[in-house]
Amino acid sequence: MNEQQEQLLNEYLDGTLNEAEQQAAETLLATSAEARAFFAELQQMFIALDELDELPLMTDLSAQVMTQIVAEPATSERWIRWILLAQIAVASLVIMQLWPTLQGWLLRSQDVIATQLNTFTWPELTIWQEIVAWVTAVLNQLTNATPTLNLASGQWSLLIILAFVAWLASNRFLVSNQNEV
Amino acid sequence: MAEATDQDLLTQAQQGNHVAFGQLVSRYQTAVFNSAYRILGRRQDAEDAAQEAFLRAYRAIDRFDVKRPFAPWIKRITLNLCLNHLALAQTKTQVVATDLARPEDNEAPDMDQWTHQTPTPEQTMEKQERHKQLRAGILALPPNYRAVLELRHFQELSYEEMAKVLERPLSSIKSDLFRARKLLAQTLKSKI
Image (cartoon, rainbow over all chains, first blue to last red):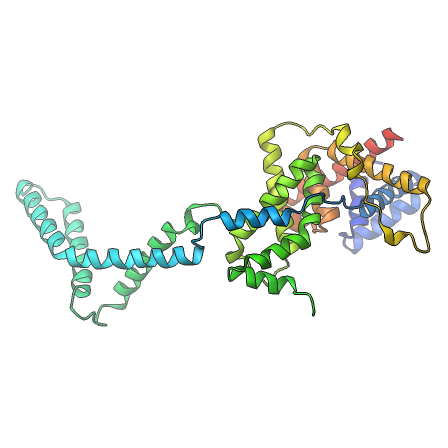
């Protein structure tokens, strides 16, 4: 009997064969004494494994586990998420307050670069100007005393996505492998 | 009063009830210990692995879907822990004769047996000897073979589920399972 036939009988006993394969296994068993002897041994092993008793546990693990759980830091994941959200909110407010200063610095930097490189035409500078103009438009609207709903939905969506990614990045979901299974 | 279901205990544990989680530990500690013992082969290592598995489960309890059964999840954690332990040790587990011969490793006497059908002492000893040889045979296998036997015969996973748990191709899982059974059969035959 070859290895393929042995595997067929293993799967037959595991109950994972389709109809045609079952038929092939049954034909093999009907025609080969060697296959029948192998199958009988396999069945005996299956029964022995099924009958294997559990060993008794001599210590109570629950007491030890509970002791360690109680000693663990009190801050649960739930609270960590709220803390992270609060941090992102505070960071956003700070950025909004500082934005006029940052904007001024960016524009001055842009002027310096443009002055010094006025003999060159750089496509990258145009792209940089467009990025600065876009970001400025978004954050200018956010620094209004009352946030308006006139901000383009795309800009709001992008802001929300960026905030969510920042939340995920500082959360364990993205960077740590906590998935035990 | 009806005993709390696993789902009830898990929900309470997610709400911060440590005692509820403790009840889950009590309920499954023997099964988890045995799962670890079948892979590691040493009582102390198995107890340590079982304890660590429950701690990891507790830390991840917030992310667990309580509608899923707890037993397969905790056993999977245990299996991964044991395989990582063996990989770090990078040694084939030596089945220590004393681990199998200690009286406390044999079945605790079950008083319920002493009612109508009491096996004779000889039958009990024969059964204990067969089980001891079977455990030794399993522990003599390489870790990946022990893992597939554990998942198929003791956790009753399908081939596809085993492939997912062990993160290996289906063909590799089938091949390991068949070879594990073949090796185990040869080992048991040689002991007769």
